[in-house]
Length: 276
Image: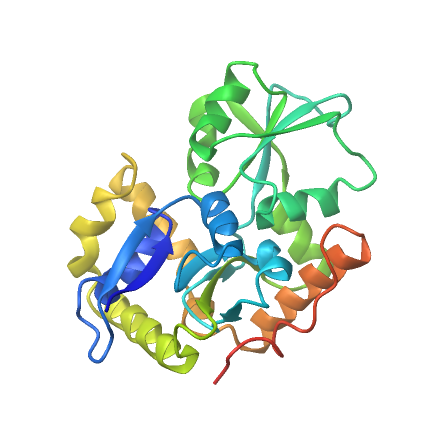
């Protein structure tokens, strides 16, 4: 029987999971794959909708009772943080309407921590692909963007007010925890799932050309050079193994957010994860 698997159509996810979903990982089952933005998977995972699922680290406090956190396959790194974009030379968010890609995304949680003493007037949850055009057209005063937008926002005539990754790294010295892979308790052996994903990552690095057609087919008209930069930034050593630095980053993010009353208190992510 096939397992259900959900991740985004972004190049880093399709690159990582190509071998697994195409039956190239020995011993792995078949999968019914859903491609969806992380705001969708965050909500669906709370209902236990998928056996393996990519979610935001910010959503973990609502999910770890149903899921194991896997120590591989996700998105965590340095120099890859969300950006707050504006038009012109706006210097702050006083009175601003800010478009965000989801209310339980890591990007929005980082934004709320950063903006704690300078909150905007209004937040609107907007599909990711509509944020930059909306800011450029004046529908929003600012937009919170992720992924490949850090390579393309200049094309929309926008300016980065703040790089939340730079802010986070400068403040904590830790990498930025963005997206996590979860295995549903009682449905998937987390040790086996981690082994499958690590082998899929290994194959992706060993033969990048093998996944090229699949990655480009799901890249939402992204240019090949942007695809390559996207994969190079978001698929890194933490994709293969979170390690001590990765878990420390997750603990710091959720701990700070809980202390600020932004997410529920949760036990250690390392304690509720399956690790090896």
